[in-house]
Image (tube, rainbow, N blue to C red; front, side, top):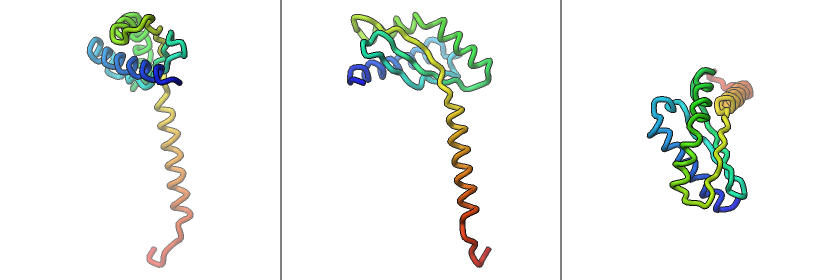
Length: 123
């Protein structure tokens, strides 16, 4: 990824996150913008988001982002000042699944360490 792609992606991520907090604070309280990647031609930007909460919160977040996508694109376009503002595509990140997998691996390693630890005379 080029330096320009990285800069544009970072600006898009920061601006979308900021806009959500300012314009839709109550509705977007459980949404975290996690990543942004821009296509090589700078025409599309894939924005990853995570939602804390149950399935209803996930559906509400998806609906909100779909509803305000054009407004966010307009806001981002004003900041970027590029010839073409990238089209914003939202994708949901499953960070909770990753966290659960890491926690399970850490628990397993801890259990193995306790099993393999040599018994001392004081135990």
